[in-house]
Image 1: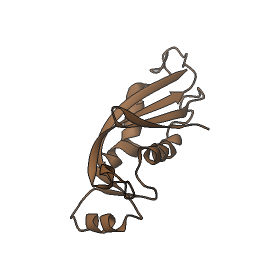
Image 2: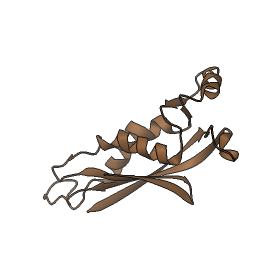
Image 3: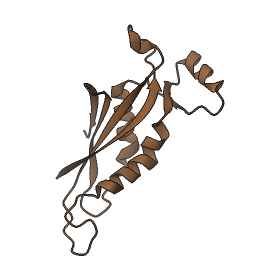
Image 4: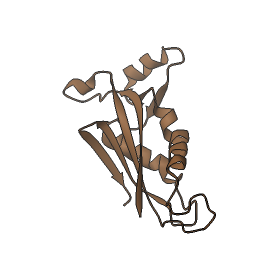
Length: 147
């Protein structure tokens, strides 16, 4: 069985080598879909009876491990030296320095890597992360999937 929980967050970024508008500092209202695979729990008296995982628990874990870290932050590539240096001049600015350029594809891969260990057979029902879909805009997204 597959289940999906969608969460949203706001963040800024830039694509330093881009030939168009995305080379400038800008932001997005990102949407993140977390798709989990597992067996349906069939245990009388269990709060998760009939579920793969409680959707509210998916949200709590995603917020704790990813969303709260990236929300209202500037996601910047460590190699984008001028921007990293500029952001360091802003007192208490929320900056997340990444080892990759913050494209939708790379952010989806990063999110998958972060969340993969979070959703692991929590209930003995073979639970695991199957896919992370990151929407950069309503019409553009990237999928990181289990290989």
